[in-house]
Length: 203
Length: 203
DNA sequence: CTGAAAATTTGCTGATCACGCAATAATTGC
DNA sequence: GCAATTATTGCGTGATCAGCAAATTTTCAG
Image 1 (cartoon, rainbow over the protein chains, first blue to last red):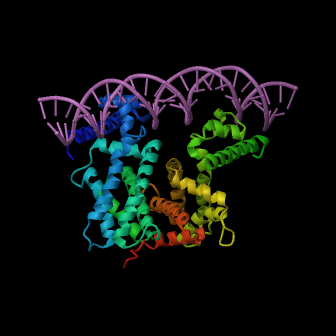
Image 2 (image 1 turned 30 degrees about the horizontal axis):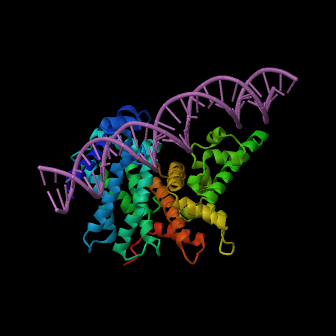
Image 3 (image 1 turned 30 degrees about the vertical axis):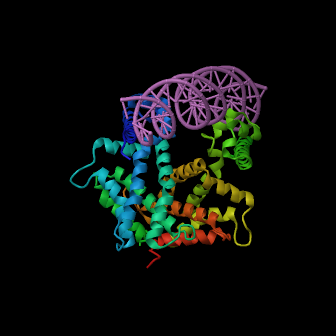
């Protein structure tokens, strides 16, 4: 499966993602046309649409990959682990890899890209779309772990979508923290609050 | 504020919403052009875009209104009421009005429209977009009620987005129930589970 | 090594959408 | 009534996205 063809495809995909992100950060999202992205990546505009169905998909692709990584991570957690512990790790780890830990702060460009993802309505919508398009897979993984059937019991989907939503919110809040705080503990806090029933803090 | 002008605008908006929904249900979403919707509503295609920014917005407009109604409802709940009770009512009531109670089942057309909203990716994305675009307002209302500042504390946003997500999931599950069950109790169950910390049902 | 088969890239084309702009028509408030 | 505000409309433009078929590249069996 690692033939020349596969590698080239992956390289093209990467090039398109990188080009799209770079141009959008440099010029602003609406000043970038599909044509520009394709040119930057060295392929024809038509080829862009063979890889991505919309102008925004290339930019949010990394985000998509993160959700998928969470699904894989949840499936890979040790079977004996308490559910919410596994869930928390599964949701947090894909972010930890990108957004660094306490001692390795995130790069300014990564920060800018995440910020753009949250600020630009079109990207926000696209990110939501893909995140909640993957909710089925995540719910299936939750179902496997908790012995519930996503088609008969709302529980697994409920866990999946609220966890996704909690992470989104955590990241959005993280972008607003001043002075900056480490992302990972913040996300853990959000998921812990979720698993604690979001108790009213005013009482 | 109830001049002829206002009433006409509202009428046009309603006509566009109704026309869009009717045509989409009759022909399938992708067989409807903006031109058709405008014609059905008796206005020019250009006018359609004065009211709605995209082809899909007219169809999801009712959904948008529901989220806004939840915000208003939350603000209107009695001050002494426990938070999650108020939140649950606020989220459920706008649905209760449309989807009926045990004795008054929802109309087939309403069911079909909600189903389309969940099945058509483009509409699902648009519905998500508007739902989460309103999360700021809902979070603000939560913040007021719980004495937390959405800008300093992730709590209110966390509550807002997870509650929205929970309702979405509840509705989606409702559409799959066979034999049908009443929507409102199902939504209450979902929100109760959320407020209980989504405990792992397998233990 | 070679040539046929399979997959990918590309250019072309057409349908559609969304918006800026300016002219026109309707409503409002004085 | 009349002037000012606001809504509607037509026209033109730029851009997105997908279908199709030709050309190119990769694969793989013989």
